[in-house]
Length: 124
Image (tube, rainbow, N blue to C red; front, side):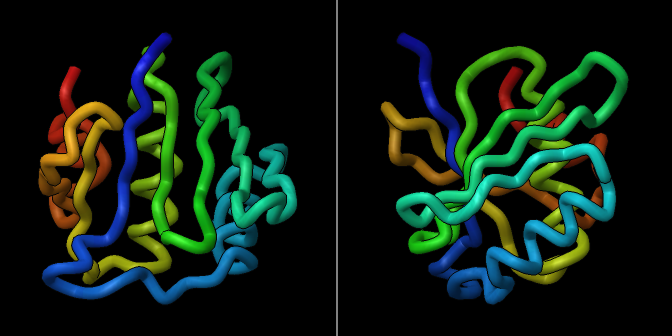
C-alpha cells in the first residue's frame, strides 16, 4: 500500500486558507475546463484534471481541515501543478507545508519561486 502526501497552509505561521470549496472548483475549472471536481462528499472535493496531454492529476481537498492530499504515484508534478495553480491564485501569500502520512514532520513549500521551484521543493 502506498503513502499519501498532504499539503496545507502553515497554520503556525498564517492560520488556515480562507478560500471556499466553490472558489477552488471555479479555479480548477478555469485552468482545466475538462477537469472534474466532484461535490463535497463527506467534506472532500475529488479533483481529476489532465494538466498536460496524458498527464493526469488525481487529488482530494479536505474542506473541513483545509488540506490537499494525493497518493504517492509518479509523476508528483501533476497534482502539485493543480495545487500550485490553485494556491498561487487563491492564497498566494500564505505559507505552505507538506507531509507524508507516516511522518508528521512538516516541510515548507515555496510558492514565490514559481511552479518549477514548487515542484522541485517536493521529494522525488
